[in-house]
Length: 406
Image (cartoon, rainbow, N blue to C red; front, top):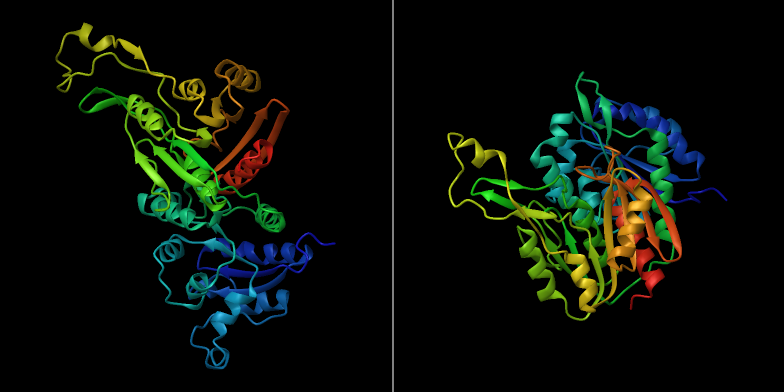
């Protein structure tokens, strides 16, 4: 049996130079058994022709919301109902902005609003456009909608820049589609339990304008909160500074310092089925934060030493409280990773720990992708590099099945 087994894929192509890769992707999807209907955005034809696509799929390309013949039968609604999965590749900065804000001014954007099937996007744009706060905010908003992302990759771009924003290769996109279809067809674990999740960094003030912190973005913790919510859980998220917006159905508590997070966690720690300590909590804080900004003109002694005090160990205190049936931590490690993670699990008395090797710069901090190892008393299970939202879904499924979360 072919891996896509006649899965109906609505393939949206938007107006970016990376569209030249799409015919190769179409061939791969067809070879794996997909049934494909291509929809162009208004500018896609500048980069790939409808004739070339039609020759591959055997179907006319759809590109007009005002096609009188098709719309006699409300064609855009029928097309949205037809699809099992929507794949947008390349997904330009402009199209991502439209999708994130519910703009429906052409056939492709209208189809997204009219459909309830899984949506995968393969972003492709200049690295500055990709890193712009507006694009990052739009990506986070789409993630909250339940959309998944494939890439982008980093490297040399058509404009000569180098950095993140290259569309993933057709083989990687095809593999991601096959995985998404497989995940969709698997029985989904469900939970009605209470989940308490921490995410993001903490900031420990030195003075009113400076602080100690780390590179955590909070994206993985946020993705896990959304995945637990989608599985039916009652989710409380304790979020450090900079964690993007979350689904309004999540009970969100925003904090700044480790002491703040510790207090918020213990206020919420009532009848918790799963506690996930994903936040990168600062181990130490300045013993006394200056009330005024420390000036460069102050004595050298004031500027070259910074007395520190140990912060409360949040996850160890959760274990000690006995108020959570299952306590799972994260370990961000750079060397001897497996042993350090196992030691941390044992030392803190955790039910499981999720190891994140942050020495790999393509995953973890500041990335939309991650790869982890799930470690419990029965051994270790590896999860390959993939988008953080898809990884979160698989980890939540793993937790529910391993620990029989109600």
